[in-house]
Length: 430
Image (cartoon, rainbow, N blue to C red; front, side, top):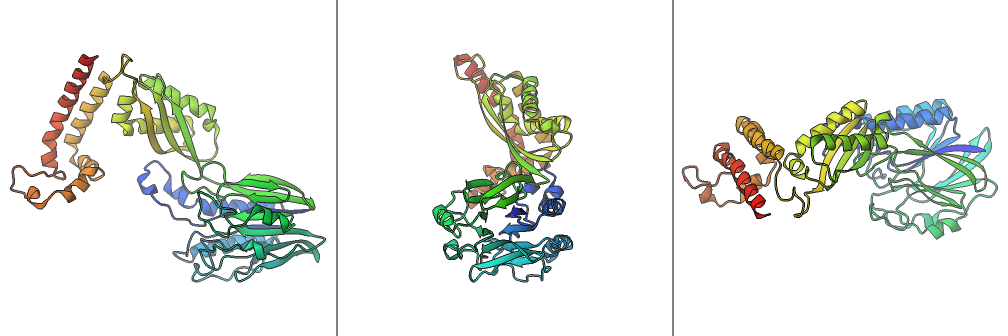
């Protein structure tokens, strides 16, 4: 029997993009997540006493900003070397040979397969042949040729494994690199195909095994759910057992909450609490970044639409209370709608919503910095760039000055009465 780990797409020290605007997310934890996931992988290999580890491309996300990224990987590989565990890997489109400008020397237990042609690596243990790994690294980022077509025939009498960074026959979510036909892989007569590049895990086929383990740590909300590797045990040709093991230290999740029929804050909070319980998020031991999507036809829509920040804060407060400080709002998406015109609540604002409008306007009048930030994040900032020069002259009493707080402040006084007047008209029309 042989036992090995199949992992891919570690993207070590992958940069955080856009998380600075996500005020609730623990950026420091997410920043170090790929390193901690790699450490978990090494711990698993040592604890399970595996015979070898396969890494199917994209160890790195790009050329290093500094060598600390490479040194961290070397340190983890030294731990495996100390336990006599070899690592066989290929490069992918993110860490192709021409992308990593200053590669560091790796420990002797790490083998990077050739990028110029397919290479077969024999794995020996106490002079006994355990398996042969066939593969080819990426020389350049954009490898669009079929690398697998040139992989050699299997070695008789042992387990043959193909390692390949590929989109197979194409993926709508990933760039097409090293495309390969599934039937072609079958005809190679290998026992196992260790694939990389697609970040969603999938057992494409079981005879022979064609497997994507996904990446070991989700990096953003597009990479939801548990992430990790496969622990694979072979008893003979085709006789394998796969066991998925999660390695991630921060998990992404999309949570849809139906607010249909809910008309007040208490109902809103109860609906969120119910979903937390149904998903067992109150029992989680791993931090989650959660995109909350509110749906349904609800009289509460007006209040939610007017002040989504308030709703987001309420949900985050509930996450802290129910989730043992392990749940974080990544983003709040509002897909609710107001009741239809035939509904008694249709087309009118509740007293609560009107009160929130007045309180918000009053708060903005008293806090010019918040008003300025709101303007800079809105289309008004872009409007200022497009207004012809004469309309922006300071001494023109009719000038349109959308970025001037003093010009905007009087307009705020008119917003509340305008909304109330419009609301009264709507009520009168029913």
